[in-house]
Image (cartoon, rainbow, N blue to C red; front, side, top):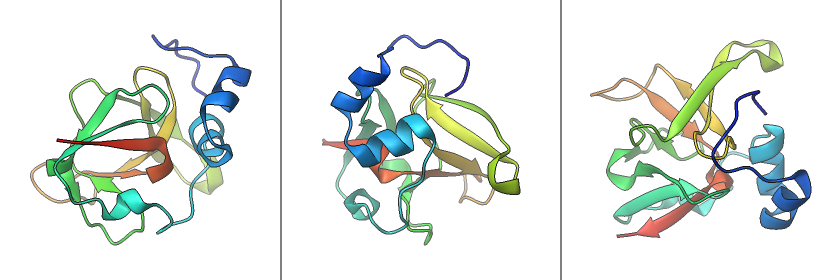
Length: 133
């Protein structure tokens, strides 16, 4: 995880008890789910996507789009919902995004998204919960 401090903190044992093994791998160990493996990639209802680690609202369904990548993609997060840092893993330089409330790894943001932001927040579906409107 990043060296930042967050309003919601848990011990490693508490995270392991709260999250599924796949969620723990993605959210606490910076893993990546297999593309196309999460049902939230196909979620079309109105509502909001929240952090599976702390429940903080992250994205509205109106900002979700089909990127063809196999992961839920959004072009704009809710104000203040995300933090970011440079990820130099796997021989690449990317911008990692995490929940600003609990620090859980969510995915990455890229500059190849649709208008109006031109951004693509490529998010691991297991890191999200969906709250229908």
